[in-house]
Length: 458
Ligand code: UD1
Ligand code: CA
View 1 (cartoon, rainbow, N blue to C red):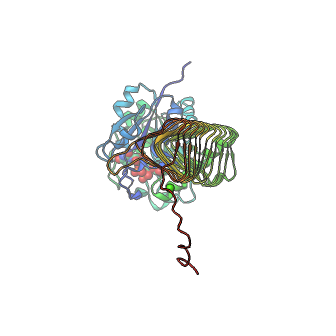
View 2 (tube, rainbow, N blue to C red; view 1 turned 180 degrees about the vertical axis):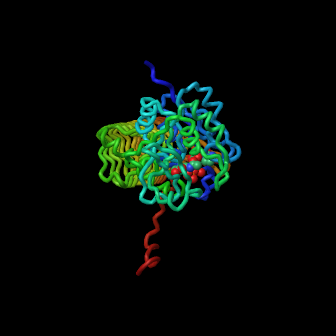
View 3 (cartoon, protein in one colour; view 1 turned 45 degrees about the vertical axis):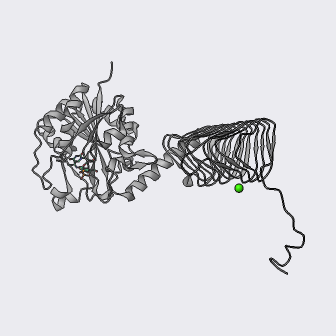
């Protein structure tokens, strides 16, 4: 029998005042991914269908940032968590799902397996509402669970709780699985008669229960999964947990990390097996690292691809592609549009921007390669500058293969250097160089005998 469908609703309309931010809270990132995306992805994996995200503050920023495949419902006035779910009513009904799972959008640690467990238990036990609760040593701020004869009867919010109720340590974690029909009919009866004047989703429990519905609560094994993010301290705490999960996944897949606590790896990064990552490495965005690479201390690689067997040391690589068995750094800087081939050497203090360095080429020290191309097996000496900007516009420099560019050469773009050309050190090249030519573009040396004496020290 096919299991009954469940749609998830992610509540993400809160303002997140305590973040003190111009960005809606749920768009803040933890381990490279927005808080609400973490929650939505977990819900999607558990339910098998795209959740509905209820958004409010920040205009259309939430749907614009998070995008497909999710459905969105706008809560234009923040009138409470119950009202937020009500805003998703059309989308819930349109999904035709028999069950509705509700989750707060600021809980990025919830795992898909945990969501699935609650849903399965709700279905198996034929619950109208099954929720997740947790035991808190300090329950301040949470909704307290009121039980009667082992059944959950009501949830009382901090603001509305009596001193006796405030002592209850079992709290609501804002994770619920409803039978859709029970949810919709209960929501219509929720009234804002509480201290906050809000429509509470938590009131559904009492309403469903008092009409003879079956309500239950499972106590979460790992309450830390339900940690909500309200301020930047909590943001850093959940980021740390997510990062350690990510690093553990890579290590289990065959990546060595000398000191995982010091490696910051975003959620979507891919890393091949037998790659070794040294302390202080940061891998961001959609970065892809090949197999058998060595990423040495202090490198930051963003939205880039690194081929198998390549070594990167103390370098910054942004939106670049680096081939196989290449050595990068220490202290190289690759900016947008950099493409480095296989078996290359791009050494210390070399900056590359919008340029291609082809297989086997060497650019070993103190060089700027901007807007151009360096052919296969060409050797670029120390201190070479691609003069790509004349003060008004950028132009390209193309160097052929097996060429030799002597130390401290300036290549003034637009200029082309043919295959096999040889440029002597200190040249300033302003005109195209044919293949196999020797170029000397510097002033002849003048020697004046005896005239140096006494100019510095006697
Ligand atoms: C809520 C629960 C409380 C629980 C706690 C766990 C209610 C009434 N109370 O309290 O029992 O212990 O979470 O963290 O739900 N939201 C909207 N629109 C609104 C109001 C809220 O989308 O108009 C969203 C928020 O963005 C948030 C969630 O609903 O994701 C919970 O709302 P919040 O105001 O943070 O409730 P808490 O006081 O934390
Ligand atoms: Ca120079």
